[in-house]
Image (cartoon, rainbow, N blue to C red):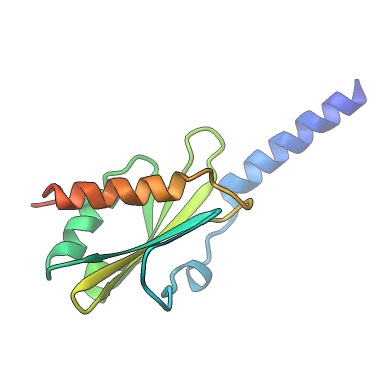
Length: 138
């Protein structure tokens, strides 16, 4: 019985930690350093062509995503980082969008674990589809 109680306490402690662990902008609000389209076990990078208003429109789309908040930056600064939390556990994923000449680089990545089972790739793809469909216009 003590073993089960220990497991429950450990799971509850972990769940609390992932929800309240601080998000340091110095660690997460950083440039990808490169562009392209790449997938990793816990991340996705996409580079899309963009007109001058695309950053602002993409910012609106991202901020409308459930459980998503802005961590640092702004479209006017040319780089913004967001935190999107999973529904049940509250795991944070970080996404940085960065303006480049004629393009936007989008980098979504997890914080905890080694695989996100394609969640960041799917989320970034959804945002790109919404932007291409003209969503996010004021």
